[in-house]
Image (cartoon, rainbow, N blue to C red):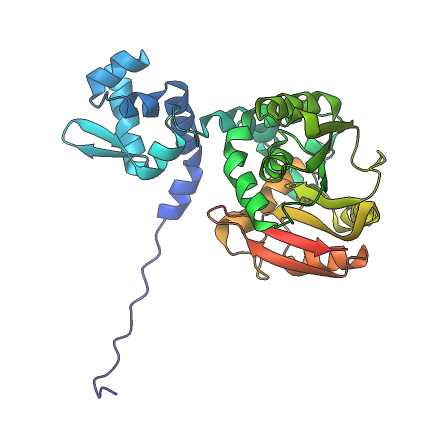
Length: 341
């Protein structure tokens, strides 16, 4: 060991930077939305790279485009060399409308007034501890918008999930996709397993979108709709898998346990329930993306939350499941709970 005294790091002095960045964060949202609406990222991908070129391509003023592009460069969405702008790696993959991973359409749901207005008076919501019915109101129209807008964003996680949950390729597979929305999770299993039959449950208007996607994917012949509330409709039985993707976080633990008992009863011997969720660590403040999701649930649901794995394990256990496993689903920030009947 060295006899030299250890250098102690001097803590950084207090700074208001984080406060100002947070107060002004709405400007980041507005800038990204504007760039998507103007097709700025796609224009750069197509070869327009200077402010005059982008202004012409985006049908906007040169001054406006220059300031917006510089701001997006500061944020890390764009690069800049001299007068020319380029795309960051993330922007090239996810914000070029020609990319199969394009997620610009997600703003139609994520920035819908139903979602953003829920935070207009967060103070009152925190005081009450609930926002009222929020987005879990029966047949809420925002879920049709969700089904149409979020399909591209969910396509990759759906494929990863179908790869993670291995099933015998030569066996007939019966899958129940609860709160199916766009349907891409059930569809991913239908595409991976040629003998899989999918039953998709959701509100009737939402299921119209799921059926459109099933037809487009060539699996409509093995895809059946089950309209109604997940809490009220009869599922039937004999399912090998029940998919619960981005659903349980909308409800309190007791409500989830009631649903999970119904799910377990619908499973065949050896069947599994598969939940995809934002799952924070036990400290509830890490990792940041999953932990921060609790606030989304506070603002948009009566009693939802981002639950830890131990909480999920307890809910599934109380519902009668024998054991639960936790699996990461890279590169997403979500994780998968697989509960065995």
